[in-house]
Structures are given as structure tokens and as C-alpha cells.
Length: 119
Image 1 (tube, rainbow, N blue to C red):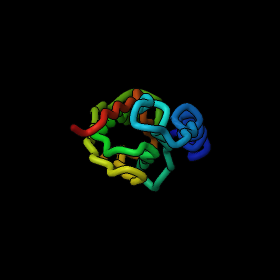
Image 2 (cartoon, rainbow, N blue to C red):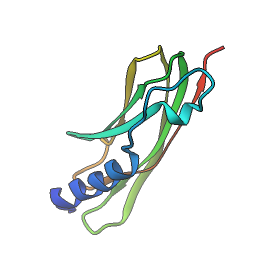
Image 3 (tube, helix red, strand yellow):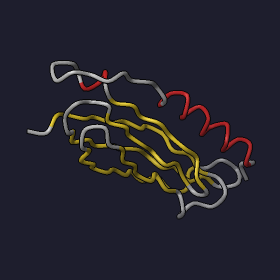
């Protein structure tokens, strides 16, 4: 069984990779410059949040992979997840990358996101 410390360590690594700050951006600026993605560990998964600091509405898509493991570290189940969010200017949204179907040993990998201005 993976100890809770290892799960937290893995979540901390994911958080470090996902968290970045963004300054407010004007209409001509890239969406990458005005979007902030952050992850927060929750009881059985990770909450993935997007903050829209742009001056326009965005359509965003998040995706991730959840891997369940046995007590010996063998992968017992893998599934992908995704969420689509529409965020008004200066709004936030989130999605749960949940691992409730896993036992005590799981990880969330391959988190990706893409946002584009609403037309």
C-alpha cells in the first residue's frame, strides 16, 4: 500500500508543475498569459482549478489520467478524464480528477489544459 506521504508527495509534485501566476491581459495578448491553473489535493483526487484573468470569456478543456495501483505497486486500473469549462472574464472554475474507484494507492498524471477566447 502506498503511504499517504507518497500520495501527498506526488500531489505536491503535480501542484508544483501546474501552479503558475498570470497577470491581467488585454484582448490582443495570448490566453497563456492571462490564465492560471492550480491543483489542490482533496480526499480522493485532485481539484484542478482555472482562473481567467483575461478581459474576455474563455472556453477551456482540462484532461488527466488516473492510475490505481495495488499494494505492491502493480497498476490495476487506468482511466482518463476530462472537463470543459466556460469562464467569463475574471471568473474561475474547477474540475475534480477523482480517484474514488481506487484503493489507497493512486496517482493523477498527464494533466493538460487548453483555453481559447469565446467567439
